[in-house]
Length: 300
Image (cartoon, rainbow, N blue to C red):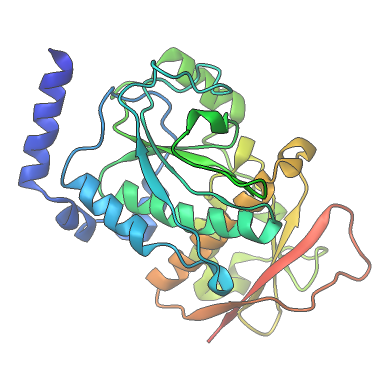
């Protein structure tokens, strides 16, 4: 009875304010600021027109960095109780809608995976849906996805309608993983090398871009990215720092790097700052432990 009432309310709301109209009121910066991980959902599949809007955006969002193509899909289960998702540890309740794809097992593909899927996550936020990234799961929960020996699913995004009130368990989980906390500016952003912190006044118009990058979600809120700005140019070099060995071995740090790149690019675009990604020869001298150069943003 309650589920039917909720479903009717959602349909009414969507008929008044279609998804494409909702999107007009939220730019990417607002989506970045407003999005949070939701772990308790209403037991509903995604209703029209949000479902059509999301599927169309997923279809369009497939070309990653340097032309790699990844084809995401929306998978809908009738009930999460029918097939338990091992490794969710019962922490995510009533999940039944998932966005995922399969890729070859490489650091570049994992980074592209995070880069593209976060764009989909932020669009889902803009059209009124709730999401949660999940790096620990059993691929057998998705028999719809046939994996070759060289393929795997780096992470899954759960999507749907969050329950209005957070349960005590969910509040405890968010506290335990520090879900609402982010590392301070001076531990993430640097000038020319890792010895000099990048001050906000030295960063000019890119200060807000980096603040939006700082809000990027990551596995265990580890935030494994470090960014160096060149002193005399708006050129930013992105490095991966191993913060958690287990997460890194599972490839989640690479996925997190992609999420970070997505936030940086989308924020720059919203603020009218044009640029492009390039892979440069940026070996650190002297080399630093657990730090690996990944990619650079060159402003136009």
